[in-house]
Structure formats: structure tokens, C-alpha cells
Length: 212
Image 1 (cartoon, one colour):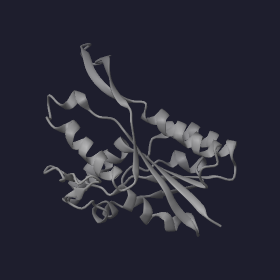
Image 2 (spheres, rainbow, N blue to C red):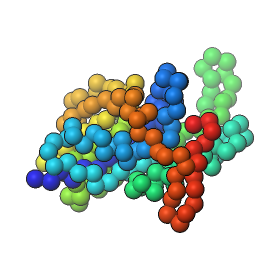
Image 3 (cartoon, rainbow, N blue to C red):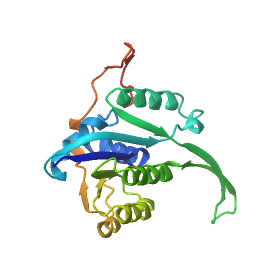
Image 4 (spheres, rainbow, N blue to C red):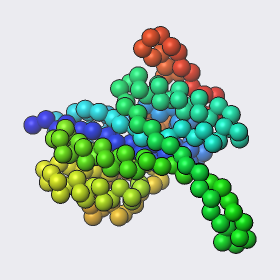
């Protein structure tokens, strides 16, 4: 029997894992071939598993441009590169939030990524409700997604919902709600890197950022 499999990727949860791994290994990891990485784990999901789609959820950090010029452009280039491999991007946004420091009482201005968790949850429920797949794999360690996983399995008991933890980001709380959990090995990040440069449809060439 076919096992139509869809991966939902929490972009920033994965990004922090990639940065930490790059530091620990002393090797480039951020030019990640998401489609290739996801394909490499199909063998864990049972016979007949096919990769039907990879959805990447993230947001452009415009607020960081004044400190790190080119941040948005580098991210946009990466999104275009993985999109050329068949990955579907979904972009949320950052919102400004003023918080008070509990130690000194001063107001601090921070930016928080919004919409990503909700977007992943909505896509999960959409896939389940429309019978668009047999297995969903969520790449994240964010426990905010647990209610959506629980609801998805209630809506359609036959679907499998698995969680793939980015390297160094496992959370035991998922063991009670997901059908199956596994850890992405850090060496897989190094193994699955996009070519440099990537040539996307239309002939545009995208080079890996020097800092990546």
C-alpha cells in the first residue's frame, strides 16, 4: 500500500539547530537541501513511503537589517533555492513587542515570530481533513504544536503523525501524542547540502552566502 508522506518544517526551530551544529562541527550547514534531507528519512516510515510534499514555514527578519545588512536577501535566496527543488514556502511575520525587564524595570523592544505555529497547525489539519496524505512528519521541537497533533489524530485515526526533532532539540512531551518520534542526526545536515551555486528555473544563479 502507498504511504503518501508530507513533511512540515518549522523553519526557525530548524535554523537554530543548524547554527548550533555548524558551530559544534566547524562545518557549513545552513545551505541545507531540505527536500533531500526529508527523502533520506522515508525508510523509517514504513514500506511504500513516498515524499508527496515538503512545506517550509518561516518569516523574513526585516528588523535585523540595521544590524546585519543582507539578512533578508540571504533568506530570500535560500527560499528560492529550496523552492526550486520542490519545497513549498509559507511565510509569516515578525511583530514588535515591548517587554519590561524584571531586574531593572526598563522597557525592552523585542521582535517575535508570529503565525508560524498556527500555519503549521492549520496545514496539518487541512492535510488530515482532506485525506491528502497517509503520514505527516513535523520537523520541530516546539510543544505548541502538540494540541494540533492530538486533534489531527482524533479527526482521522488512520493517519500517522510523526515528529522529527532537529539535532539537539528533542522533547519527551511529544512521545505521548505522536505516533513516532526520531532525531535528525547532525551529520545529515552536512551530508545534505544544496549545490553551490543553485540554478533555478529561468536560469538565475543563486550562490551560497559566504557566511553560511
